[in-house]
Amino acid sequence: MQSSSSGDIAGMKHGVPRDRIYRASLDALGGLAFWVDANGRIVDSNANFREVMGYSQDVLSFKDIGELGELPFGADWPDFWNKVLWGTAQRLEGVLKSSSGRRIAVQMTFRTIESAQGPLLFVFATPLDVSDEEHADLVHVYETQRILDEILHVSLQPICMEEMLDRALDVILSSPSFALLRKGAIFLAKGGETLSLVAQRGLHPALLSLCSTVRFGQCLCGLAAREHKVIFTDHVDERHETVYDGMTPHGHYCVPILSHGELLGVFNTYVPEGYERSARDETMLGMVSNVLALAICVRRSLDELEYMAHRDALTHLPNRMLFYDRLEQAIVHAKRNHLGLSVFFIDLDRFKQVNDGLGHETGDALLVQVAKRLLCCVRESDTVARLGGDEFTMVLAGVANRESAGKVARKVIQALKRPFTVLGHQCRIGASIGIAVFPDDGSGPEALVRHADQAMYEAKKQRQAYAFYQGEVFQA
Image (cartoon, rainbow, N blue to C red):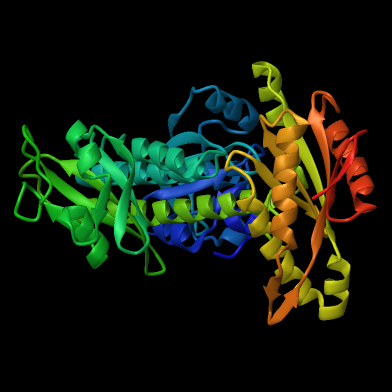
């Protein structure tokens, strides 16, 4: 997946999502929907609102809500705004006036949503001269819009993918206008062949293991994944391969989550036995699926940006920022548990000759191989970072004495002594290592790194050696 800018990720204009999938879902809604900022300006609207009012969004953007007709708050918009923010005055009647002068009596529901630019009011207007059936449909539309907005809001929170989908599932199962049992699950596609359970509500304990991984084509969720279409059943039929003792009668909607034809996952909802399949349900589920797809893509893009912000672009090792964060955490842990740690500052010998003589492409490829060898010299709990150029650092948690640190240093030097084959060239380099030990050589990150750097310059005088801060130099 390619990285995107933070502005592109959210696809926001005035804080309202403008993603193509989201817009298609929004414009498919009936009812009159629009968003208003603190100044009363109409910052966005759905297609139905624009059609009924006879204005384009460009025109609406220069209007404030008081110009739309005879509305209950009159000219006192700031006072009304504050009332809604504090949870009052959320449902009122008024009259909208279209560009042609047509008057439309409506009931308006106001709800606060968060955006990149601060709070907005989402306004959903229901015409009063509609039948009970039409009114029920519009209520259903409002619930759908609420779900879409809340899922998008959750997707932009600084939380992990699993928590985001967990919260999204709660939002989906909260709809009072959709006859769901409050049970369901969300799976993510893994490796093109299996689904992995990442969020669930109300599932029997037996299912948590039986459905932790589902093959494409297996049971109802696997069928939805394989066939890229909604799978519905109003009872436990032969396709329901996963069974357990005490399973009660029920049905399912299993809905694939797709983005440009790529399967991202499946969400599974439970319905009562004998439930009647409906086009209205499937329209809503399709919209929810589209917005879940958008939310997953947003979360992945944000995760990737977060990863790249803390990683060296060439070697994918932790960069300077993440290294210092890890070192600070290691020091806190060491102090709390009365432990030590060692910091290595590693400079490559003869790297400049390779980089200048064989070219930067060869030099970059060599650095990638060096990173891999360094990782093989330490434990998973240790940190290997690239500060830049041919300088690397290590944090060795719990390595508190010079004997243990020296053993690791010798291992690193021997590993980097071995010839490298890079882009058809055989390269020989080495390493000089400076070592600072906590707490003897410093109590904070800056002091430890500075002292390890100073020790490295002493080691550099002999090459392929390691030195302790204010201590001896050892030839490996």
